[in-house]
Length: 322
Length: 317
Image 1 (cartoon, rainbow over the protein chains, first blue to last red):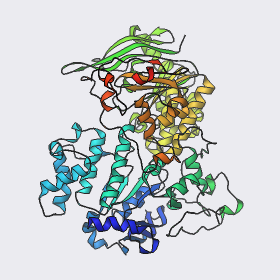
Image 2: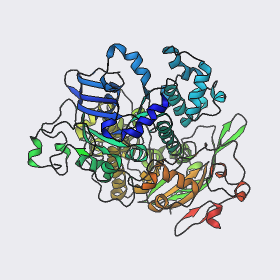
Image 3: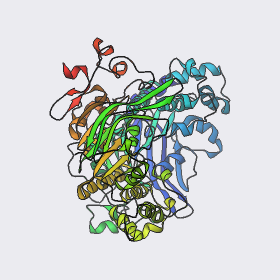
Image 4: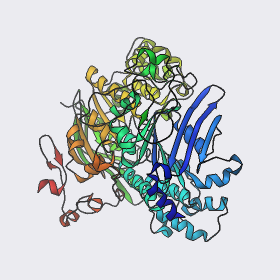
């Protein structure tokens, strides 16, 4: 199983022979009838691919991730898993395949559960047969906690931030999922630990063929590990493509602004957008970015931009891009 | 005279097995109109060092050395003088804006409190409106409660609060850590603009060397309670001399740097427990370029270029 998934990744670069592990088709999630948190997203993530979903707070990236996990129901459109629409009657089996890694490892772990219990919980819920202790030990050591037995009886408060995040990742890995969805996996960690956890995600992809969707506002993280980047703004993907292309020659003015404010020396002019992202309850007409766009054109207030479709290449939803 | 001067400052916390040194012999100064960055991992002592300025540490902490705020030693100051110095001479922007604001009081009322207590303005409400505008919030937001504001707006309120009594020095502890890149850029712009316009001094604490490198005039890097490198902001980020600074700088890669593609840089291991420090250079057990001598030699800050010092044997040799 593991070998076949890993080898699929190799063939995954041929767009025809690829397997879409997780994705969305015209996905919309509306809260309370008017808050359009996810407002038409098409996305396909191939087997063994690492995709970074980037955007500001409130852009809908976390809602999109939660919907892909089956934690929210779409208002319309579909979540895709292994090329088929997600069957909500079989959510439990689905959740074993698609695991979540949360932002704040201290909040994600029960302070009164040992590391062993935290990792074994998933096995018990899903009634996974086999030697529980061996499975837990295996997951811990894959997550870089070695020797695993030394960590069995430790409590979260006895661990460092990086070790806690590894326990959370081990809890996901123990179920042998195909997909990890990681919501800001390193934003609460120290600078020195950050690279270690990102390196772990890369290694898991290479060794186990895991597919990873990373939700983040950190473009440096995307540059570090992602194969592709999808930039989200007000419920929609406004630019998507291979990481090097999106981050080195961004087409959408929003992506250009985001990149210009990444702390970095020798930058050209910063484009600091004023204000917070607008309200998903009142999405502007025309291009949804036009009220904040530094290079807005007259037609931007009325033009209707189509949803960026799936497929390879680098695309942006902007009238300035043909 | 410097606006703020730490002279050989040390802080020991009381531990179960004797004192635990959190800050060890730090000498550092901040001038008017200067932004000084302090970088380092959690537990390196950077927040403790900042808290010494206003004597905000718990009673169990023993502080040594001298801390001169505008020439006056904070450690020997009377309680009344210290109370007067808090807010009006120096103010702190704490991290975690949501938790530092009172959820059941309007932000206007919270902003007015230090102004009323210190009687720094005849009309506190007018001063509140002025402060809100200074940090880029409409004056009408004074009646809003913290939960009605976004993370970036709350952080602006925290900054306005620090400015309330017109301090000469503002200490900002991880002011942008929980914020988005765009909001982070707005807040950093605001802070550096205030230093420029009001001629204050500022201490900016962060573990993100990229943030510090682009905003600070100088950066001091701390490890295990000591300063291991000081230099101009851009140079420390761009061309670090100490291997620890190099690891911190590498953790936040530059977009476009081919060396960082699929190669995130981490630093294995954990910082030492302050009560159980290794011999020799504090950093040697984690150092990627450690030499035999590092395990025993005592290291101190030595010249490492114009306006730069670093505590590393490789720099002196």
